[in-house]
Length: 134
Image 1 (cartoon, rainbow, N blue to C red):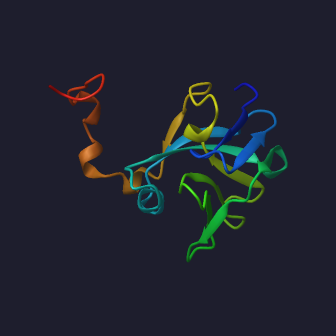
Image 2 (cartoon, rainbow, N blue to C red):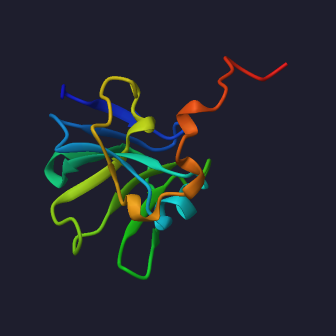
C-alpha cells in the first residue's frame, strides 16, 4: 500500500495525517461498528500509533464498555478513528472513507463476519443505480 496521506471529517474541523503504509485494510462487520456508524460494515485502515497524528482540531471520544475509544468530529459527527490498546496494542484504526483520497487503497479482507447482517449475503446481486431509481 502507498503512503496514505491525510484526511478528516466532513466539515473540516478535524484533520489527521498518516505517515507510511497501513498494516491492513479490512471491512468490519461487528455489531459495535454497526451501531457506531449506522451501517452494516465499516472500512478500517490499521496504522501504527506512531504513524498517525491529528493535525487540526480535536476529536470527541466515546469509550465503550470494552475500553474501545471511538473518535469522531463533535461538530459534524463524522466517525474518524478507533483505539483499543487491549485488543489492538499500538494500532490506530482509521475509517478509510475519511481519507482525502479514499480510493487510493482497497480493502483486502472482511473481519468479524460472525456478526455480519444475514441480509448482506447476496447484496452484490441487488440492482444498482448510478443515483436514484426511476
